[in-house]
Image 1 (spheres, rainbow, N blue to C red):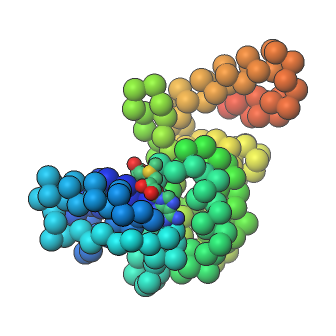
Image 2: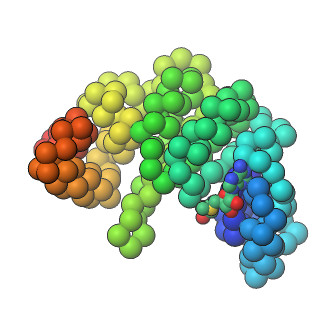
Length: 205
Ligand SMILES: C[S@@+](CC[C@H](N)C(=O)[O-])C[C@H]1O[C@@H](n2cnc3c(N)ncnc32)[C@H](O)[C@@H]1O
């Protein structure tokens, strides 16, 4: 189930690849769903993708059987949806997010809420990096953060699996962020020092 589906590319892709039994695109507004219907027609997946008018995670009816994807919205919005529907999130088979910003807050929230970070991936489109994280409720401490070679705070910021793997694309992303933060610290903006130290640390490791 893709919430905030807009053009419905995510559920269409899932249907084309056959990665799920049933693909559903949810949006709050009728206009995106009209666009979504056009996508389904163009890609020939009308019979395989259901489109639903709904509000955030409130649209999930059978959490245990559902993987929810939320992509391309702000991390703050995702966090507010997840906080509001924590019990639904805990019951989901999996929650996959690709937020625009505030990913560290989402990772920290998930950790505090007993959700494990199962995996995370980074990709690049033109000059932008995008990180996706998969979470699910599990018992006990999250292995993603066990014996991490950086502090918890740095883990939330950088991504524990990306750090463990020494992901080369993540390294490029960290270098860029380090440069950006160095500029801000250089301008005397002391509030960016702590974050700069995290990126400086991982780039010098
Ligand atoms: C920026 S688009 C995201 C597009 C798509 N998910 C992607 O990754 O490219 C945000 C979409 O979320 C929808 N949206 C906003 N608030 C929503 C809510 N509470 N529930 C469901 N959809 C919502 C908007 O109508 C819009 O179509």
